[in-house]
Image (cartoon, rainbow over all chains, first blue to last red; front, side, top):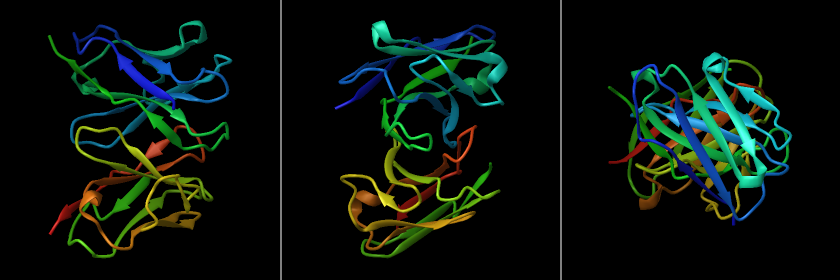
Length: 120
Length: 106
């Protein structure tokens, strides 16, 4: 069974870079899309972007100029970097894997989420 | 693509039939997904391709619709179903979610 686990600092200062890693167990990083999402307290889920084994990425235009998603198959993890953060970036951040290799696959596997607070 | 869910919240009793709607701002064919989320937990996949039940999800959950209008139905609400339900479109990037519907105990 595929499992995902987010890791990274829970507190980031304004204007700095938020960096998170999602470690995958129970499967390899090949074939599927690997996604980052976030959910501000009390608000809806927002998709940030994804990466494929090839390194191809897709980003949410609302965050694109600040986001980098990358993949490291040798370590079986993928990563998120969000720079120039503000308080509006405070959220629970989730990593997730597509259920299948279909272009229209839903997100079938999720990490437990990690709360990142932006504050000085 | 914007997704508008209604209602944003509802109160219901165990055994009630519950219907939640999700409207897309443009045609997304059948590329609509439903998730259930409980407090402090990640979303859980319930239904994809508008009407396909994810493995292990009880048959009291069903989905329907295509194009711009979609529905999630719980035929007989159970105590474990009190949660927030969200729709997501996977038709095109950026993937987007609805605002959620909180189902509370009446």
